Amino acid sequence: MTRHTVLRPDLKERHVNMMAFSACIGFGLFLQSGKVIYIAGPGLAIVAFALAASVMWSVIACLGEMTALFPVPGPLFEFPGRFIDQAVGYATGWITWFAWVVILAAEILAVAQLWKFRFDPAYLESVGYPDKELGWSTEGYSGAVWVFLFLILIGLINLLPVRQYGQIEYIFGVIKIMFISGLITFNVILSAMQKVHHGNHFWTWNKPYGFSSPSMVVHPSHDKTDPGVILKGPQGQFLALWTGVAAGLFSFVGFETIAITAAENKDLEKHETIKLATKKLTIRITVLYLLATFAGGLNVPYDDPNLINIQINSIRAGQNSLYVLAAVRNHLRLWPSIFNGFFIFSATTSGINALYNSSRLLHSLASIPEAWPLCFQNQRRRLERTTSRGVPLASITVSWCFGLIAFLAVEPFPAIVLGRITNNAVVSELICYTVICLSYIQFYHRIKAAAEDHTLENRHAYNRDDKQYPYRTHGQLFRAYYGLLFCILLLLFNNWRAFVPPFSTPDFLASYIGIVAFFALIAAYHVKSDGWNPLKWRRNASMQIYRPPPVVVVPGRRRGHLDYPNPKAPIWEAENLKALVNFIWGWLK
Image (cartoon, rainbow, N blue to C red; front, top):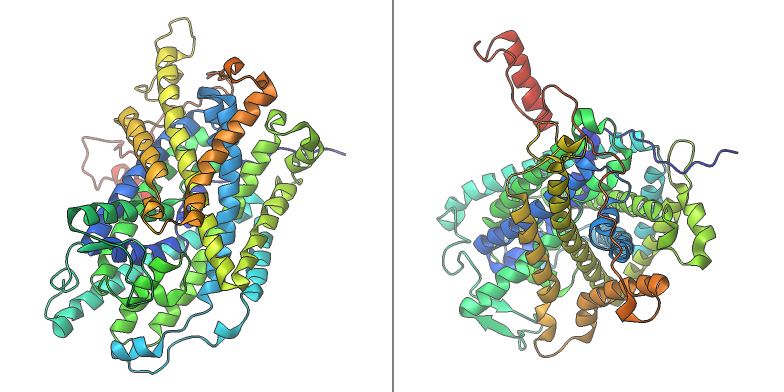
């Protein structure tokens, strides 16, 4: 019997792009945007998302360039292993896999919470809503029902051959883009009506509100007699901005999906999948997040009671969404339920992608015997196997089983615990992003030296200025340092509020135990290879750039660039017009 262990390269550029987009658009945009507006205010929230997007932009370009040149399985840990240290690579692989299985559970938990859609009658009365009640009759159902049903659905979709899976993800991504574009338009229309109700389109930006929140509430509570620790003035605004950046970055987690799909990409050289998918994702995510936050912030003030509820608990229901609140405050029926239904769809599709990412990471780790203890080698071989259609069935099953921790949603307190675990997963992702930026710095200098080495026959393949180099961006080395510094600062101060009295031990552990675990894994690998004496530990980074051979783009017109076949002819000339249409379609699809 043939033992299959290889994934099938059946994904096209449009599949990869929408898979990454779908991973980034879960419940984060629809709930986190309101949370950031509460923390920082409507204007400062846009600044916070822009800064978070700049970090994403820097890291994704680092990862995209390395993966485009060397499309290896498991690039998130393969490149750190090559260019920093093998132990760092293995540790990065394991904490990233853990992050994605927890994100899977978090998305399922969000689905369970979103079914508990009901507004407080007192709130409806305070905003003048025409009905006394607004909610779904499903709120009485146990969260375990929704966890079970949606886990089954997510597992079944991931069992499809990757080509069919990519087609489904493409459809999901298109639906999400259309919905978010409609949501932005919807809020702009509501804002146009605000002059009638409030006398000004920007009433949430003017007094008694403003561009930014006047204070930062560190430990908010429902108790009006104990509002929590309040920081005012420039100090409070700066800390609000920083907290907003950390919250916003959680919403962007998932862009590394582009690199995770490298082993299943089709015709990398011809279609320049990594380059185009990376650029498209950066533009789409940044523009949609900024516009959606801006438009929603025009209709809901930052002191809305339901936004405050988001701050208290990590994962809430649709009645805490900025966009549902905009519809309710404008006395619209039906729309709040439609929005909440789409939020369920969005969280489900992100859960589908989280299982894909975690299973592919686990499958890539399974192909490396050195990444596993000796007692787990038999299990490793089973996880490495794929079906005849290239589906890593065992890796999917194991990763899916960890999604069962979403059953913590059955009780409210464990749901808060899972919120803390989710925060730990985001910290693990930040560690991964930090390591990626550091890997790129080493990679950059290594290929620069190879491009200048006249003894190499294919040195042009490493030349970033060569037309056949698959993907490069201007100022990328500076952006790598920028991303490295920003991610380190976020790691150290992602939850500075835990240190403000009263000290929260659970929040502190959730925010920083991941860093300790990362270095503990590195130490464990060095003990395994070099012994117990730290003085004898040695760095093991191959720095090799020859296997697999570097990708070069086939000669001819580069995709993503507008080159007219007949430059001297007018644009409406047949060949030029065709080139223009293909260029526009290439960036839209």
